[in-house]
Length: 605
Image (cartoon, rainbow, N blue to C red; front, side, top):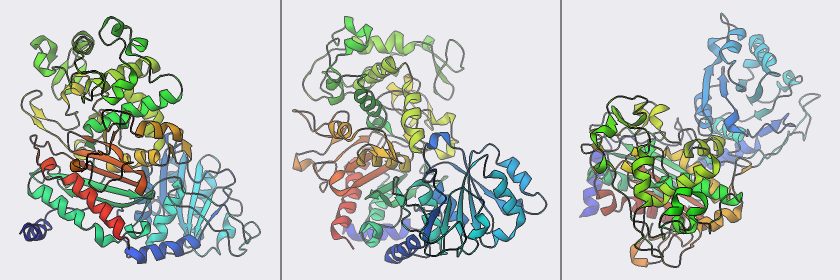
């Protein structure tokens, strides 16, 4: 009966639920046909002039990148894949050919230090385009994506910039070359013939895969049809109003094989969900932000897991927490209470509707908190709170609030700035960070609760968690916002053993230590939540392996990594909009979608 109900619901919902895929365009190749075409493209793609190792691109936080196309017919698909790795500004070079001339294009791209130029054989017949290439070959990082039969390569004999020659013409070729520029796919071939005095047979450069690839399920040994059941579970979630929308991403073997957006930002259906949308990650912040920095500082020897709060925080030395160890905080075994009172303790003199030197902390629109409120009220409340259950597992937001204070004391750097500089920007994570309302338009951010008790407004770009809100939106327990793709990048780095894009962020042993079971009284790792050995709990999924680690978020988010299956699973939603609801959990939406993925892996092709 339930199956018939949902078959009917899928038919009805298909009329108004927007589903987006990983690529901006739908290629004419699907499933095995896509994989077969990709193999042919790989054999027909060569990298030349890469003696300086510019390709794959590295140090993404230092690059400002423009992509310029002229007559290439698949430029939109090419640029859509580039934007999976870094923020790219696209220019239609044909608008500059003729009246404007290459000098105007030079002017408009002057603030970009890296130019990716898409060229065809026809483009090389235009002297203005050749002039533009010659003018930029010294002052800029220049990467040429050349789509042609190779006979025109002689025109590049005086060019030392990397050239990716793709002799096969198809949308898949566009995707492949774009990903090769960032290391999403390898370049494995050399020139098969001599085409000029410079470009001779067997010349070329080989690269290896260093970042996520974006492809079809069949490329990871999975039949696309076996993932269709994800749609059914997502539709059920929206039909039962467990959430107005969601985004699901699956990466297998370092390949994003599924990335879809369902529904809308809110139930009024004003803004369709997109795969690039930014969500309040809630407690996923604990592992995606605070734990990441803790891992780095532990690896550097600047934090010792068996040192105490008193070692790092002078104010803690006069409290009952002076000998609480860092390890206990990360395991939620410090005896801390779950949280302290937040907005309940606010006095009229603590808040203002306008910002000023006295009220500088923005909590939400027209809601400002007085200076030093955390130091004067919240921090003493935390330090003076009781320790009732030390040695037992009691999940507490205070543990990561305290960790933020420790981290900032050790580094002398705000948590959000440290993470941006050391992880998010270098990894190419374009949306991840705190305080998104300062960096993005509201229609890019998925709203959470219509808060009628505390902030009396719809929370759009402001953290949902009240403790983090009173810290100005930057806290160790919550406050991180991100897209699904950003989360996939971060956790693929962990799955890789701490490396991504050719850079090492952690030593493998550090990743293994923090993500492994570290408690005698719970399933927890250090900061990370893990697979539950109690079979009846089916957590996080009844088919997940005991190696699985990750975290969930109160707003309706989760990220799970399963090393046994080389799998990253991301689910993002705003189940608290417009009001908090338990339906997402009671319907088991997140684990059921995760189960579909495991079942598809087991079935194979």
